[in-house]
Image (tube, rainbow, N blue to C red; front, side):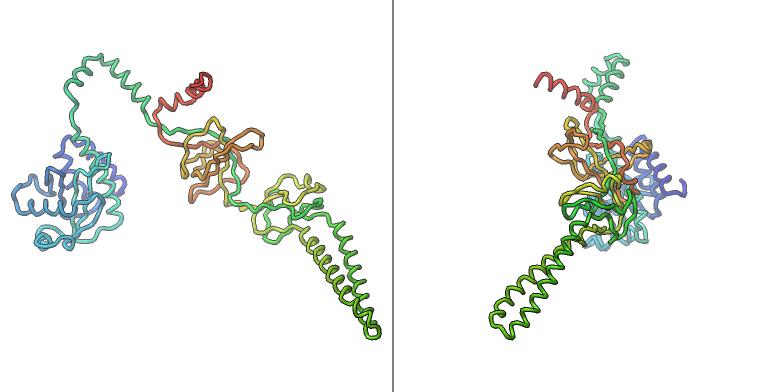
Length: 436
């Protein structure tokens, strides 16, 4: 065996699968497993058959005290999960006898077939506690031990079926079996859709008011910091209105001063003070509103990122309405995949399903992602055709591609037989024509 535990694990798996009978396989389990992790004693117990193998001995004495005690331990501690055990897990005389028969630290490994049914238990015991690496390697070993044991104990086919099969010419049998197996081979049902790398949570920058864009201060893909000016609207009209409002406010202030002086000598002038003060408040509110609009005409970045927009020259001089999108600020490292799935290609897709993005810039290195959602309703795509919007998040720890890259996304669904995968689209066409 190699010093590399993975190579040792592969070699042990090869020995287990090449075992000619259950005796050889049991010997591999209780003796050769020591190449993965050190232990003093090992024993194999099979459900319904009892103790089948013990490390270091050629045969098992059925009525020996150790054999009887060990079978009781297996029946009491058997579990469907890997577990560690010791004398404290047994009560009564069996727990008191543990130190006479086994080291204090035992590891119980359930053996299961492909359906998950427990076939038996492999016990390994030693003096020190079991580490995580040893448990992981031995757990993997118990998986192929169980599969190998299940293969050696498969029920034999019925004699009549065997006679009928053997009467068929061998080449026909091989050809038929090959075709059937090929058509029943499970493959993932998948569809293709045009895709693009988009920002995960961009800050969409919209026009705060109606007006004409005077200048765009950023270029596409330019890095911006929080508070940087992105674009500004034309303020000529607002500047004029603000000047008029300030002059009107100054006039009202002068009228108030004059009325206040006259109020000392003319009682009628006191009645005009409230009216003039109300006019001043109105002019002040109007000026404050215009100043706020002047400040809002300079649109700033709400957070750091990169500017996502088309040609800035196309925006300069263009009239915009309230809420109209001008650009977006996105994080270049926080991206996801957006695809458009044609209505005819919709299959059953689950959240978290695998998605592979083949970029046009690098089609030989697919980007892995997980499905987030597929919209129920088909909506118009940018090119005018209908499609279901698909979003997928990139796999954890994988470096995301650059924003804006395009390609083709493959969305994988459930596994189906190859015959269904081949006949799905032709059947859909026939159904559309025939109407069945």
